[in-house]
Length: 236
Image (cartoon, rainbow, N blue to C red; front, side):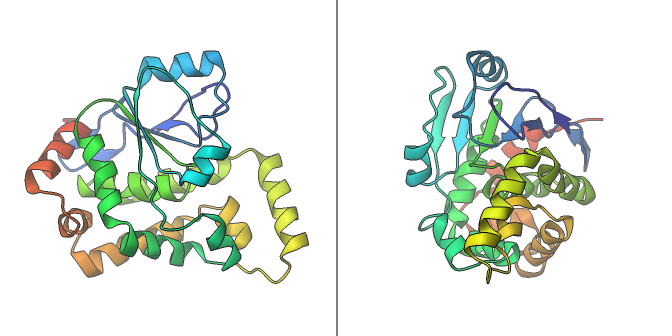
């Protein structure tokens, strides 16, 4: 993975370079990040130079609060959660349960996001932090083309170190002060433990056989999966 410096945007990286069956993940075709609303003029120019399609996984409440306006790339809004992000904090949902919720309730929208990646144009996938919705979407896309599992997990786990430390500390302090009974909220807001993604991918294997099987079960065709591989994998 390549960490990218885009002014005003956090947690930006290109997942190209990781090993995959038959070669490696192609650089320049799949990027991921947190929200883009803070992008400076220079940051927006940097994104336009790299990206032709943006997939925004945030809900309407998040988009309204932090609108993104980067002329040039096509933007598709695909909110992955049924309901607001706030509801998961109110329910003190764990990361494991949140990701299972995504698998169970958002399969068609996950497929819709991955179909855009499969079209071949350089694509940036993002949500608010670039951790959970983005992490699951990117992990499924990579796993479906048989990218190295440890590399997929390492990419997911990298997010925690890419979040501004002062942000994570501020959020953790707020949660502990206002929700002292919460068990999972700090992790939900600030952490990306490798074991959580490993458990998710193992769950996918156990129930659907593999990530490609999960995508097929939610409407993705073999031709679309072949296009995804063609887009993402190059010979080493």
